[in-house]
Image 1: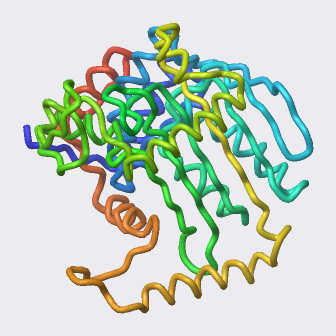
Image 2 (image 1 turned 90 degrees about the horizontal axis):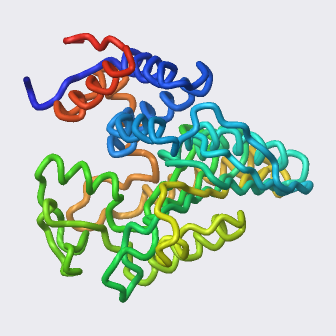
Image 3 (image 1 turned 90 degrees about the vertical axis):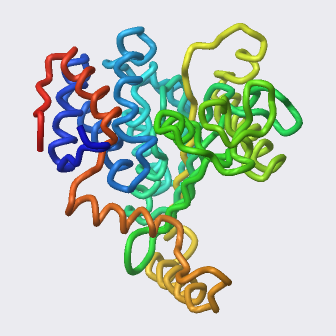
Length: 347
């Protein structure tokens, strides 16, 4: 077998949806989950694509991920809502909460949703871009288990909490900044371990807490910008988990709870409540043009905006297919077979 298998996006989406329907999810929820995962693959963010399927399936088997959640609203005001996701799949919970946030933004100018007791939220840009396409600005963050050291600590004490901001544009796709608070996301670190690829200096540490470029020895990534990334992750825990009254980090560090779960926040801002939408979008376009028109730095041949590289990769992979590493495809096939979904030998 070659090092990768190239699969048409529609085929991979259908297989993923069928797998999760067989795992107990409704057709609509399985479609949302499949769409979110394949969207990440299309954009080249393979750490948040179908490589997650075996893990999600295992969480369903263990009762960590609830395939048939019953969402409930804990508290609600004109501009805020606190949602209990009942251990739902992250994409299902986040899309549900996004709808609430946008609706409240239309009514109050801004809508703030806190999501408690969900599971892996997948690529936050998936939801942020959707919100931006509806004429809103979006700010989204997610909290999870300790996966990187707080600045000065030698053990996992904060999460790699992803953080995303999106704004609409007049021409082209929304600007979407989607980053982890770590130098490298934990998912990408795991993919590099599987591939046996070397890490860049300053990306991760080993079990002894020493910096390493050996992905096999790496156990956790380091915070982005040292105390800056660590501090941002800490504050995301405060504004998600603590605001939702569902602490994660302190419970794990106390040794009381290590079961996977996540919390999240979604802020949607109705642009028109502050300035005419077309004026805002024109100003975003002007800003992009102005920055792209500045002299190039040494060693650069182009200035890219947030999300632009992913947009190009998406166009390419929609046309040529999604390359899936052979090992990841073998895992996907194994899980699909366990749930009775037939995966073709070739595409």
